[in-house]
Image 1 (cartoon, rainbow, N blue to C red):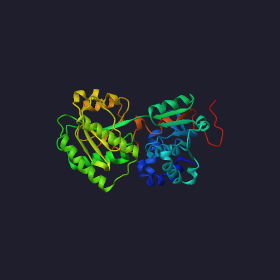
Image 2: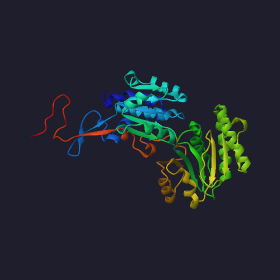
Image 3: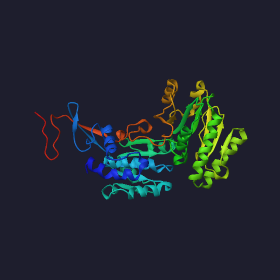
Length: 369
């Protein structure tokens, strides 16, 4: 199957799963073009320097999926299918239904390239050309240790994101609606979900919190979500801790749909998720030290207005790979550099042909004597 044929078959899937952030044909072709230089480089030799080169995709990819969000697994499988690889998905129970639904939406010619595994399959892992792992850093280390030297290994370990509003003094409804959108999508469970909202001391924190509380209350009224017992326990624990420390708190009572806490901590600490958002006032001169626990783990930063150059440079030093407008944190563009990488590039190896002409597909190609 050629790249063009795979694109044609995958485009309808993209429209059925808008969470992928890939509208259709053009963006699928663009993904290959950016990664390979030419979208058809997997189909045969293409000009390269004074010779020719061809991209070689893995015959099979073993994906270790996380238990948090299905979209990361969908995107990983989609990219494997775009390359024409067989995809072996080690799928946790929490995501089994979502991955089965994704596989069933594929046309038969591509569906046979996707196999869902309920647990670790040693033989499949050992025979795969490439390994992709999503999960905690401990999970990444475990699977890295099992790889052979000749297997491609690509990891997406622990990452966290945040909102930075600086010295915002007049929070608007539009700004707050953007913050709420970033917070509630995926119930704050993804690597692009904001862990906290960082403000400078002169920012209007209380008016911002009150406006956030009103918008969150309305969102909860229109679209409430059920809470599992373990989620409810985490939310109540975060609220109890805030009250014990005397931190200002806004919440919705027994609904457990949202929580806002203005806290005072010497360094960043993660949220328990489930729409528990911390508002942290941090002077700029202390910001690097305050964010130091995120060094190497910072993913996206949602911002509004102009970001001072010194703050931008700090985010890059800490490892951030994406800076975006508030309200768009959960909607990265199709060519988003996930963890700072160009999509697909790490899965490809290249073969160079140094003859004067590319090799013909059905005949022997002779080098000049």
